Image 1 (cartoon, rainbow, N blue to C red):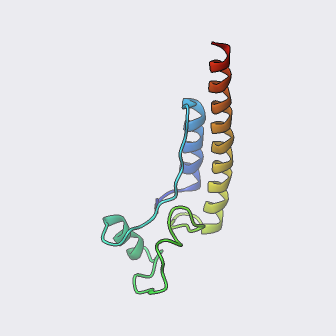
Image 2: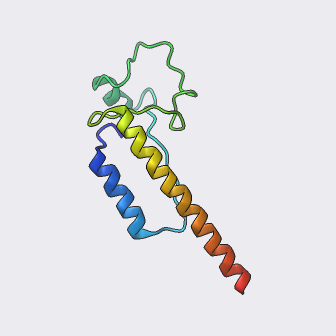
Image 3: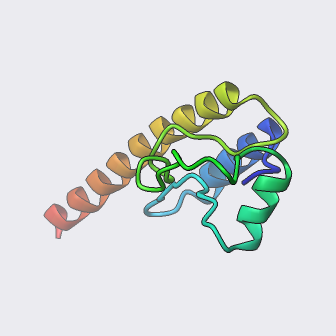
Length: 105
């Protein structure tokens, strides 16, 4: 989200670890035209509304884009990729635990 900080990202990861849910899905924020959040991103000059080169398919939540105000985009992407790696490992571990439990029954 545009006002995300390094601290809030780390707190989110800490909470995920504490809750230890059976599965986690992550996605980056995509500011879609016509939404209040899009307007906020444009007002914050994180996106040039007049940029006709902008392609939503190429710059969606799955692309290496960062619409953040409170840290540089490189730091955001670094934290996002670190979090993604942890989430992927978590989901694999949880999946194996479920499979092992099924085999024992």
